[in-house]
Amino acid sequence: MQVRKRFGQHFLHDRNVVRRIVDAVAPVPGERIVEIGPGRGALTWDLLARAQVLDVVEIDRDLAQVLRADPRAGNGLRVHVQDALKMDFLDLRGGGVPLRIVGNLPYNISTPLLFGLLEQRAAIGDMHFMLQKEVVDRMTAQPSSKEYGRLTVMLAAVADIVRLFDVGPGAFQPKPKVWSAIVKVSPTQQPRFDMGHDGALRQVVTAAFSARRRR
Image (cartoon, rainbow, N blue to C red):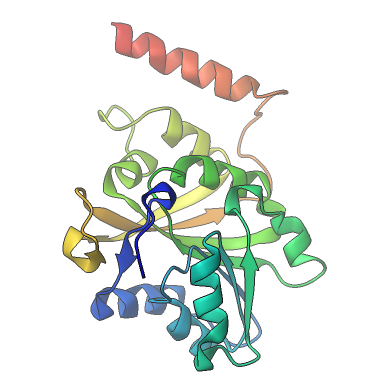
């Protein structure tokens, strides 16, 4: 199936990497697993085999149809043809158990999607994502390091971040120009410090790091 550049598609095909990701998530029956951007299903069928029920969110209608038609889908695969940036995850959870979200995120939407999910963190238990290595470097940066910045501080207010392992370009088709990394994000239901109103913390942090760059 043709790669659609506007969706930032890089399809994972390395089975060893797939195994390591699924082992890290360790889904079990009864949990609510949600995969964002399943693509050609590299992770999908392993996740479904372990969890028995799996929700997937796919913006590409052609890929969604291929997943639905696959005999492995059975009655356990629920396909949502939707932009994950616009998805109501609180509604998806409903009154059930917290969602466990997994995804190989397109580089062009990874940061806004991550913040959007954390705004709905009441619905979420944890998240395992494949992201651009540079983004994960900033997410997990230590104070005083060159990678430490606005993203680090904003995430630290509402989540615990653990870097799991790096993934080279050869694990994907087509090969991206950068390395990727797997990260686990565990939201805190209450912010660790006062975030203010109407994005006040974001404005203060942005101003602070902008001033640092000007020095």
